[in-house]
Length: 152
Length: 184
Image (cartoon, rainbow over all chains, first blue to last red; front, side):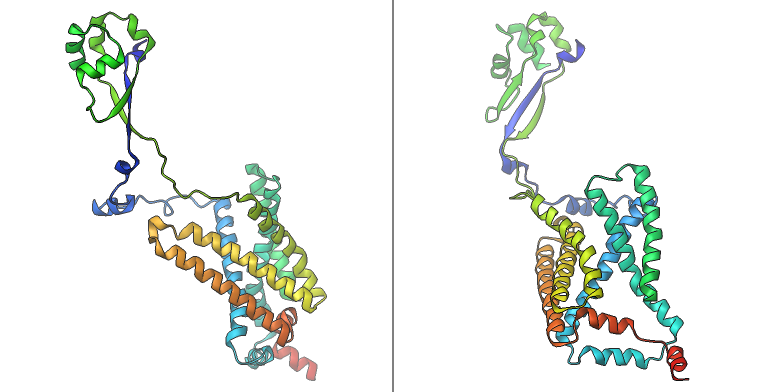
């Protein structure tokens, strides 16, 4: 009953009068306000870390693809020239395997997590426990996959 | 306060008369007052407890924000199909190298990378943060890079040993101790 005593009126205004001169960010900069900490204080979790790794490995692979494609357009030599160049470095077998592991890891991780994403897209494994268990399984799979690729 | 002054002389306590007689809201503004059904039965003196009317500004024409002009679902489905297709085409192209599989691989990989980097550009180059020009420039640059990459990869496939064969050759580089073992 007490709440019913309040009178509410609505004032209809034109759209133009609600447009502000400066943006949210410009206003806060003008007032000299700092941004609250966000990325620096939020606790890293498996979910967010695996997700940003997926983006990071995807970007790394993308840069590799661009380098291959754009390199083909720019360079004046064929691919055998570059193969000979790398052979000339005379790296040891162990170094080469280690390098191949490092180069292949983004591919292994991105493929394994990509499969996990596709499962999510079908509506599977979306409960938080399943997200965590598939997350750990995926990281293990990524290492196995990369090891296979590095040893070929 | 003005309400109670008005009500002593008011003939009828309804919403429209309140507005006209009390001039609570300026003449230019068009306002509606939502009258509470129970108020009509309340005694005039009890109304002195009433808080002044709350006036909220509402905009009738909703500003068009970043709204999509068409449905996104077809593109989403296509993205997932290409992603799943990559799982098949990459092993196939490496196991049985051919120009056709190489070309399919190049197209799938470039379009997959394009959509991925496009998502990053949309997420991180927000107009509120970087201004209005940079996101558009980034989108156009991405299209140019993707087209050029696809062109370069097709050039490989056509004029060089082929995409998968080239990668295999890099991967097959042997270490110097392996070469010594082969010679001895």
